[in-house]
Length: 339
Image (cartoon, rainbow, N blue to C red; front, side, top):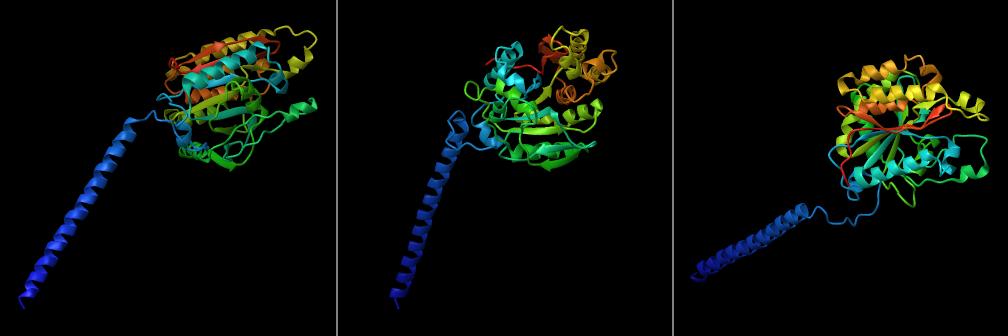
């Protein structure tokens, strides 16, 4: 019988010993994990080894965005523009593109093109991860339909756009499509795939299938907060766009008076302080030269989206060039930090 208590005491001591061993192991793991976590928080500039993908979080590892993105309206030409590499507007878009990739450094782009209109009260959002090109033009040389512009979409960014539009009471349809030439032709100039690649997701959103500038301003306002998440909003169109007069005057390409006067009005309207900007933008289309500058409104409506998304930021004209019945003006809302 005396051996029983001795055995129990040994067993008890053994159990305590194992408890101390396990406690030590867990303590070491806890210290290690805490140190590792602190190291990862401190080493924010460490290069990412994750493979390329089309999400904002992964795109963020390739660029460090300021707290708030600016907003751009880019004057983008038709299919023949992509071969006009000596045209002043082509060169200016290249400058703006380099500003975006080297100073703005967005995580993603949401773009509105003049060449995609959807329902009267509903916009469409491209949710496709893989986005081909749409050659939505006719009668051009065969090699125009062989151009490529490498790009990718992002379901994550698209769903953020859909969420914010839905909260604002704006109808949304999810679609799978490619980029139309109202985006990729100008992006070839701004973001040359070899010299200045964008390398972030591009999500295209349609305009409404109506010509109501107020509703398009409202779309931009609904998306303003995306700018705080590193999303760059771009409207792509033209400040002045009258193709009828352009074709008629090809043999005598003089600058039409409205190509300068209406753009001056745009310049003044975007520079109005935010509390009065929407009214100034609405007044633009009541000008006497508005109908000549835009017989239809699809090329000017993207700037209403851009102005709505600008929030408290004031707009400015970066550059302008009247040419015949067109104007290639480029605008930006918000400041850009130095590189």
